[in-house]
Amino acid sequence: MSVKKGSAVDAALLHFKQVDPILYVAALPHAEYLQTKTARKRKTGNTLFAELASSVTGQQLSTKAADTIWSRLVLACKGEVTPEAIKRLRMPTLRKAGLSAAKARTLKELSEATLSRKLNLLNLKKINEEQAIAELSSVWGIGRWTAEMFLMFALYREDVFSVGDLGLRRSMETLYLLEKDVHQNQLEDISKRWSPHRTVASRVLWRIRDSK
Image (tube, rainbow, N blue to C red; front, side, top):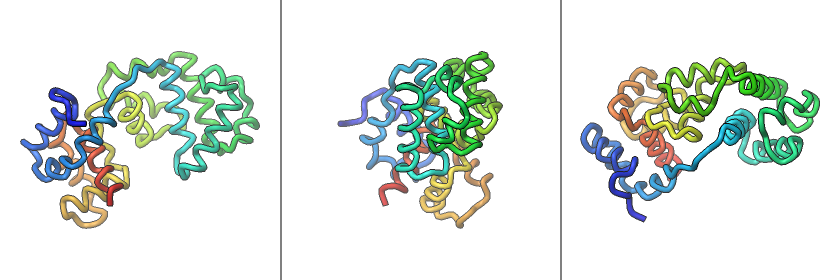
């Protein structure tokens, strides 16, 4: 598969070629992969809720452990993790599925915020990234990193960079020949070149790191 003319990946690569030749050269071998990963699917509010709940469930866990707990949670919710289903579950049931007390509380708080319409996940597509992160982070237990990953992978926001993500930081240190644990401000300064395509840039950096 070749990169489609006019696609988000094509536009990002053209931008990187102009503003950051180092990233551009590093991205070229992964263009086909990037194209498959940027395909978009139409999502409902419940789909977005499930994706965010899954992200909360899997924080700081191995993929295997996260998948096991998520499968138990889906079963407890009778097949679909929705705000209504989480509201009906008692805390002991959530804990029995394998969730920590903190994660169980976060899912309860997320359910309440969604049902009360304090948080509208679909509306997050219509506001800027920092506003969206702030709204997500207003839910107890949801931090900036989780919010940023949700914007990237669930909402398909195109200009998100998570300077707190260790994988991105390590990849940048290698690619740009920087010292380990370089100050985040330096990484932020580099990332500003990539705007408004920082999400694609992040995918490039993760891909480079995972390919080694």
